[in-house]
Amino acid sequence: MIASHNVLRRPFLAAVIGASCVVPALAHADINPEFFGYARSGIGSTSGGGSQTCFKSAGAPAKYRLGNECETYAEIGLGAQLYQQQDTSFDFASRVAYVTAQDNDDESLKDDDNNISLREMYVSGNNVVGGLPGATLWAGKRFYQRHDIHMNDFYYWDVSGPGVGISDIDVGTGNLSFAWTRSEGNDDGDGLFPDSGQQISDDTLDARWSDIPVNPGGTLELGVDYGRSSLSEWQKDYYDDQDVDYDEGDKGWMGTIEHTQSGWFGGSNTFAVQYATDGIITRDGNAVGRGTGALRQEGSMWRALDHGQIWLVPDQLDMLYALVYEDKDMDDNTGRKWFSAGVRPVYYWSDIMSTAVELGYDRIEPQGGVSGYDSGDHHLTKLTLAQQWSAGRGAMIRPTIRLFATYAQWNGDAYTDARNANSLDTGAGPNNVDIDDNNGLTFGAQMEVWWGS
Picture 1 (tube, rainbow, N blue to C red):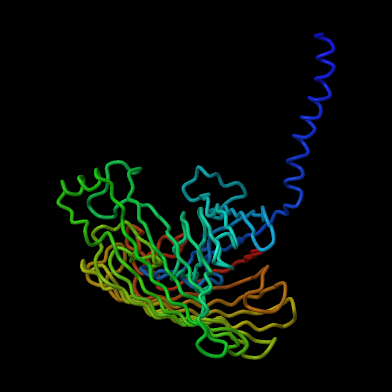
Picture 2 (picture 1 turned 90 degrees about the vertical axis):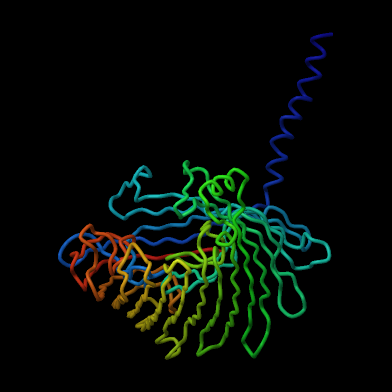
């Protein structure tokens, strides 16, 4: 009986094993992975010696990029559509970023100048909510509807991070989107937590009404972001013991009105106005519309900007341009005014070869209580000439290989005696100009590429 039982069981066991191998294969047979990303890398030197210095005005949220980037940076993304039935689908996306100091062929992650980070990991479901055709439900960590100026990499509206939301709800005139995202950080005041791992959670609620037609080729986008720190009971007790008022600076809101015009001299133009208050304002970096964990940061900020791409001569000469004015008026006198203007005309000799010139200007007018850089008004002008080889015509076409030379001039000493920021931002790259210099010249080569979604 035992022998006959084993004989009967073997075919059954073989069938089960075979099925277990076939089912996953069938389940994944229609999955086509998507590979997408962005990268830039190169080599540069500073006139007078040393590796490439990058010129950024101290206190400015951004710098003009062409021939002025000192790192290797890459974002590698993988994703796939995992399910589709009629109009319903589920998609997965992930993205890992890596930045190095661009020093050696093998740069260890143990080095403080190198870093790897997980930027995206989320699932989106299209047409999964009954009664809301065309809407997308999503959850996870992601880049969320980011708005930026490409020339200086300035993200003026960005609530990216872990979160959940629903987007593209058709309301007849445009689309509505709602999201809840989170960021964490340690308080930047005198009441730092004793353990760096004890961080403040900042919740941001984002509401947008986009794609509102207002004129031929023109659309409007309206948005409101509200951010507030979510303090635990022990954190409240901690601040109470230090007589820290966390009721005002821990929250804030930002409103955005943005108009985008297509068909603008063969390209497009974007104009935006923003107003923000208190804890949603970052100090020197991009004021992006999400909470910052700054419990004692009270004040207001308003910003107006215009940027775009136009064709001055069709298929022969195009130009990127940007204009920004930002005023941060902080109660503790640590704000500043920032004015920025830049142009990047590109002349196309052929479908492959082009010559680009970028001229950028930044001016900082600090309030009296700033620290970490020159407390007086200061400005920086940067000029780059680049010879480029690209995969087609157009300022936003990549991949590109470029040779460049960059000259910058600023007022005041570059750094303090301790090589801290004075007129130049010390975090923008190697500080290989002399402390008391007011100009610098760099040269080098760079590649830049993006692909996929």
